[in-house]
Image 1 (cartoon, rainbow, N blue to C red):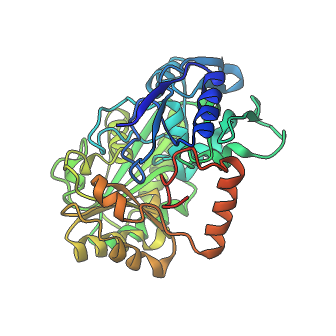
Image 2 (image 1 turned 45 degrees about the vertical axis):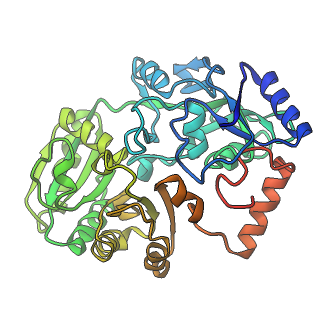
Length: 403
């Protein structure tokens, strides 16, 4: 077990990095540890604990902007903005249930580091699209900041977009500034039964191509659907969410039902049932509580998602469902083996990437957890890493072996 260094402010973070660099040591950066099982297993000398680096430093509801230190619990932030009728519009995933941890333990730093957005990604973008600015410490032990606290920000390079999703391999974010948005007062979900994955793809395409402003679109095969709130015993179906003020939602619901008229019997879930359903879709609840069974997250063309999900589930003996109108596939396999070659070979003809989200430490150590990089992209990634962390101090190998 590596030694733990606790940092309480940006200066102590910078000192810890400089000390590690001088001693030839490597650092695993951690908040509450909710994302620790994501990526390749850590093989570092020291652990830098940021859990004490906590607190909201700015919240201006009228300006739709919030800044918080990296160790601030995400649940606290969501509760605070909800009290003002606002939300984190990218709907960040809570990985706790899927990874065998506790729900609601993630921090804003971990959320930013992994960049895992939920169903609203199709309408509002990812975490990086809402990051206005960061304060951070590089692998050289140098504090820096990028961006600002305004939505129309043109100060220098857009480094927050680069750092989001880098799993702490480029820098240690100490404070993050985010754009928040008003929370819709009403939502409804239209669910329609489908007879096949191809019919599901047609329904999703028709809904997304309409003017109904769908903010969540999922294909839920039989079995998977039955393990979601409000859908007990349901057959295969598509779920389509609409949000906004009541008159708008009602008008768009009527329009969507006409769009789906020839596809299958449809029904409407009201707000009280709709919200827990989409939270469960976001957090991959159908595959939680199944030990170390391998779980993949595949990004591909939405039009092929339902049929590809069905093929992977059939060929590998697992289960799968689609989010993001078919563009995101969650695949759960029957055992601990990741079957990485089979998964990526099936995905290759359509383009996209596959990430191993859950597996045993041994499986994650011997498998390319993230999509392997080709020559040019690998060289570029290496140069970026060396620019911010030339000593390979920060989370080395967390994303790609030897980098």
